[in-house]
Length: 110
Length: 116
Image 1: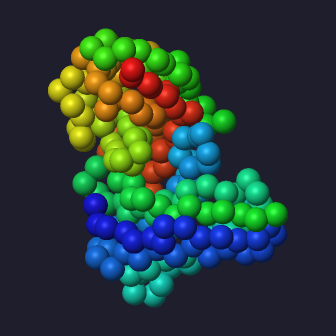
Image 2: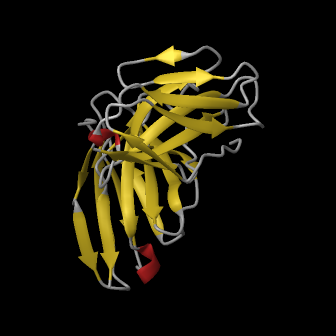
Image 3: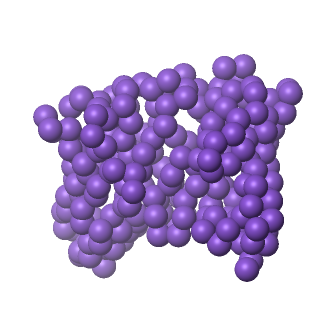
């Protein structure tokens, strides 16, 4: 799978928006961008995915750059429960496995 | 709750031993994936089964094996255990075999294995 680059860590305050960036300059035209997160002592959980257009769901929004070389996961109002490692993953056709990078450790301050 | 269950939650054993980890996928999901999460290697894909058949292999050691049974639950067998096998083992499930690029995987809570 194509490689993604994320900051190792980010901090936010409770009830403020958080923008988590992901660079994927080698993305191919048909790769989907997926975000998963892993809360402490839990398995990863799906957050959102998209191809070209911005996407919204009950958990977050995904903003995808026009050239698709980067994307941003947006948590509109961070809560303490959002403290987790966030993984940006590119999904290709080669198979169903998920290739996790190091992700971004998000800390939410009260 | 993802709907994926894993047992046991914790497992402590000694080097050289063999253990079996069990996973029950979400109702209706035919694919089961196993991942290993260790401090130095991060989350790594081990193996995938679809409807009882092996479909893809990742960085799985020869000492490890898995199978998926007719009722779709899966077991991961780890043998000749070494200290370095200590890790979290996650099972995930999804509906399809190769999945579309939009397909979501649902992860279980994991089994924490400690080899002493």
